[in-house]
Amino acid sequence: MKFGEAPIDQAVGAILAHKLYDSVGKLVLNKGRRLVESDLETLRQLGLERVTVTQLSEADLHEDAAAERIGAAVAGAHVRMRAPGVGRANLTAGERGVLHVDVPRLEQINNIYDGITIATLSEFTLVDVGEMVALVKVVPFGVPAARVVDVERIAEASGNVLQLRPLQRMRVALIVSGAESTRERLMKSFHAPVRKRIEGWGSELLEPTYTLHDARSIAEAIRAQSSADMILVAGISAIIDREDVAPSALMLAGGSITLHGVPVDPGTLLMLGYLGDVPVVGAPGCIKSPKTNVIDWILPRLLSGERLTRANLVSMGHGGLLKDIAERPMPRSMTDG
Image (cartoon, rainbow, N blue to C red; front, side, top):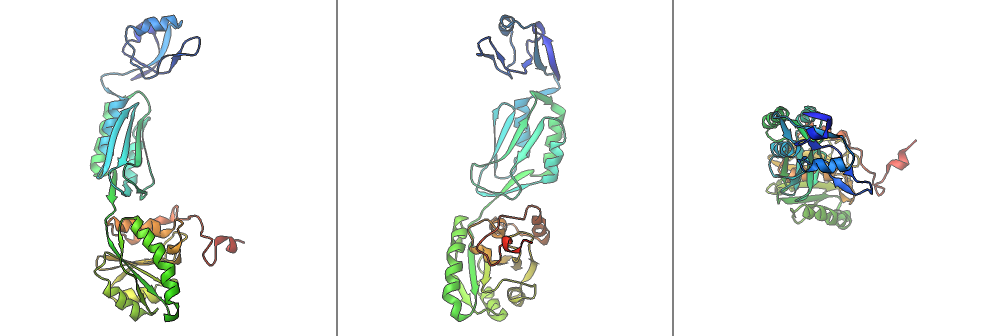
């Protein structure tokens, strides 16, 4: 591939690099046009003897063909690809779900050759059907075909550079714990906002359970809800320690704790564990807030069927400082020195 000025009588078959206008500012020839013999007279009328063009060799691929092949290579499960031309391929969500990106492979592809670019949404973004999740853009008018083959091989080795895990319709249990005297207040404060989130993600919130705030009572409630697809445990008191009431209840019920203390704020007090294959979430108080918090980062992934590990959770620290929630007992503004 050659880029640069060429005499106009040697420019037939080359791709025009820049737009050309006449003396009154009217567009005459658009960039990206493959020049034909009849264009030479137009160039002469513009007073040009030389013109800036890209000349592709047999070893090159036109930008449109390259973008389409790259888009097809990186589009994995539930990701749709459309190549509208101008060196781009649009990748969109075929389902409502959570975007997964093989970040190391993506970076490897973006480092292959100047002008081969893929820009994506952040990994684990929840997207709707039809929403754009990535854009492939080939910047020059052509690239070596061998470099596109390199992209295809990397994508094949990855399996799915970009894929979507669709949200599943799950049955979600909510256990609220506290003193008998606080039943009405706690049920009211948790039920409506939790139901709005769960139903907004296309799942069903089962009739909430209220129990006393002690390990044995909560353990019995967890066991009673073991047929649900997910269990949320919220209470009168936040989880302060791995040995606190809710974690102890999960262990007593026969479950295991994946992590208590997720590096996302608001929501650091969240606990995630499992009762067999059923995720059990010890929810922080911010589950009641409509603002984005740790719940919005974790529950959609669980609702897509992903089993989250400790490593998945601790990796959330990068970018985990979210906008504060003023309604909580001690917002950041009160703790600033």
